[in-house]
Image 1: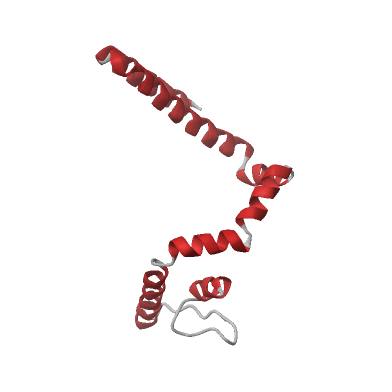
Image 2: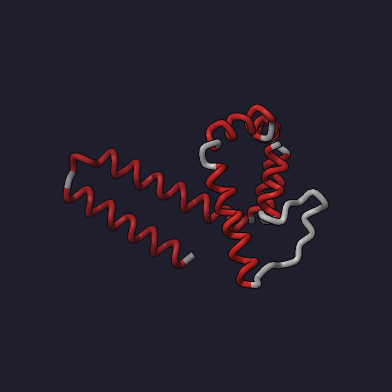
Length: 133
């Protein structure tokens, strides 16, 4: 709480100095100050109430459920895949490199990836590949 008040004091001093230095940019200064305050309030509420409780309560709201259903639909996954398609080969190449480096350094953690799990990528990358199919 003390740190938050100190941050508010510093931001207020910054706004005052900005307004005193150039009175022309008052509207942008106020917008920036408001955006920073919204972020601080969101972080404070998330810290005090807790993210798990906020998530539980948000799932009870019909609009949030509708948006979550839309974001988890096949159409949304297809749109994201269409946008991310150029990046996926790079991701899987890095995963192959990551798996081989861990194997060479002896850091391989024995994880059961399943019967069809290839040994050349990590378990997480294998799960992502299965979700994409």
